[in-house]
Image 1 (cartoon, rainbow, N blue to C red):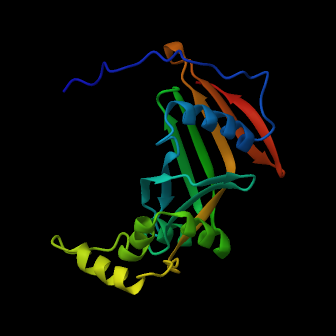
Image 2 (cartoon, helix red, strand yellow):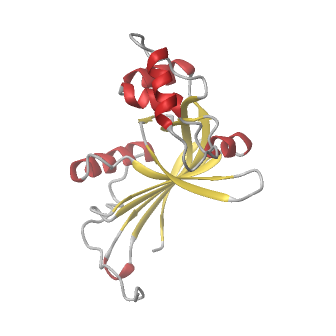
Length: 211
């Protein structure tokens, strides 16, 4: 397979460096709204990268489920590999890529568990099948190739028959509090626009980066 000549000349948009938001959360929201207009089903998909206790990096796709002034929130099993990584090293990275807009956002921050009631409230909003899934899966645990989920699912359905499915204590959210955010806009001839926000002395400072 010849892939060395695969390339695209980006030309859909630019970053207006004379009209910037004061903080990256606000700027991200503007871009995220644009992404929702062109892909409202997967615009919140992003790559979360973490580092294990033995210093091996690991990346996986997660779904962003909340944005506020504190940062970016996703939910997971607290016994999963990603959660174990965060337990020993809360420094993580998020990467959003929206090819329809030729845009990328890179976020570096610190992952912290959100308040219990916030996890409860989100869990209640999930479809019942997804609630069951949180109970069903010991995420990242090795299971047999012929493991039958239906047996466990039937047991759970009996347990919660005619009842509200409670949030398992091993499942909840993390908020990634950003310390650096880079916005990348593809441009012709690889002369891409890059805008970096970084916390300095408790304040957001923005700078333009070379392509």
